Length: 547
Ligand code: AMP
Image (cartoon, rainbow, N blue to C red; front, side, top):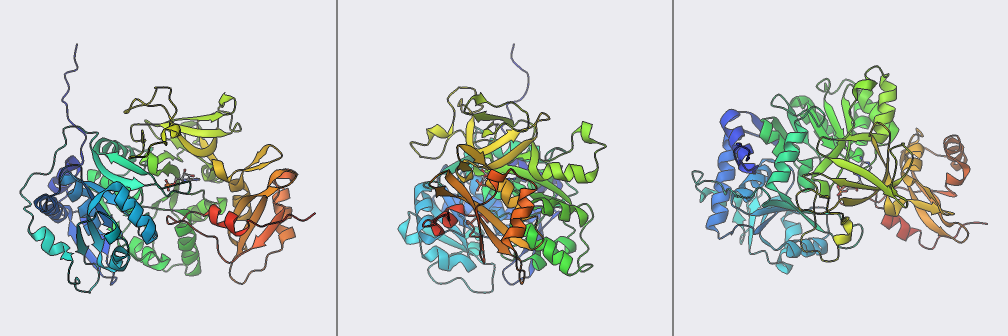
């Protein structure tokens, strides 16, 4: 017997069509370079995305060819999110915080043919475009400057496109629609090519109560960049459900963000912990200045949040949701939500758990594999986190030799591969909550035993005078490696290393305690705002332990 259901592919044009039909006037608000707010509805956005699709086709783009974007979060980038796949192309979101050499490598490796770039980012584009196969540069104006000679203006480019032409319809929902490169902290960056199906299924997951509960009544503001993992899928999920979208453009200072949240009634937003630290500080510095929508969901991800952060967000009347994900997992794969048996837990206890742990969302399977095979779900046994789901990558784009990131037990979904080896060290508790303990390469191996640098950092950041901390492993003649704590004090504060050590001693075994504390001005960050431990390890490469 065959099922009698329709073969209805999960493709992105379905999300756009729904939004333009049902939510033509639902607003998309963008902050532009000059700080002005641009507003229009899904109807207008879809019309312009369709024009872009047709203009790209007329410019010779063939199905499967790549179009780069070098843009902040705003409405024209959203048009590209639909217009590029709508032309049959693959959108390659380029990270504007990378160096020109890295951008040249990535744009060449992906085979980008066209680049759509914000006018304010043209100086960066000029430094790498000529070293790539990019034949055409289209400039999106988000400032008052006219488009320089020699470049095509986005508005005149899409004016040639006919919005009545149908969007490209892949027959196969596994057809790629966008590609994003990993941050490449180990080796060269690698491309993850997302399929229409993966993005649509993940968007539906974000609409579930145990995802983000995203719906038509929401006003969603991705602060996480649209060049990073499709802004955690905010744009596609918001369009699918018809939510209002609020896009902060290049203005990521806490005051600008808070003005937008309060002014536009933002009900859900997401960013890395670094952004939330600054937002919490600004809110505390000027109590009463911003009236945030009560119960605003604040998605915290991309790095481990120190305990004080979730508590601070909670006490300010927002609802923090901590999640974990990777470029390879189409963003959020686990989210911290209350299970039924936790219903009567005091909020403090819930927050303590959620700071560390999160549950795999529906359709995501996780396991932890240690030296002795699959680890028990006892909240203690650590090993590598492995994952599979319909939106987890089954390989990298054109990256021979990277196959060992997948297990070969033929149990995977989609591509028929095994599990994806995340490179994160984790444990899972009896209730199924995952705790990310560290990146494999960031663990400190002292005398054959593992020390979690992340746990130490979070404890150090619990000190009221500490702004940030990073713990790194440095070679040690006797123990193999020992932890060094690099600590950034808050402005004007003086911290006593002994005081810090005493705090940690109350929480951790003696052999876990850092052997030294370095007070520094700033923790180096990657292009996506994560602590760059490689830079710190290089800085202390000549370190000699005392005694
Ligand atoms: P990226 O692919 O650039 O998004 O980086 C993914 C990596 O960020 C993961 O492999 C983790 O190491 C780290 N990461 C993401 N979310 C979290 C989190 N909630 N807690 C700890 N680490 C995280």
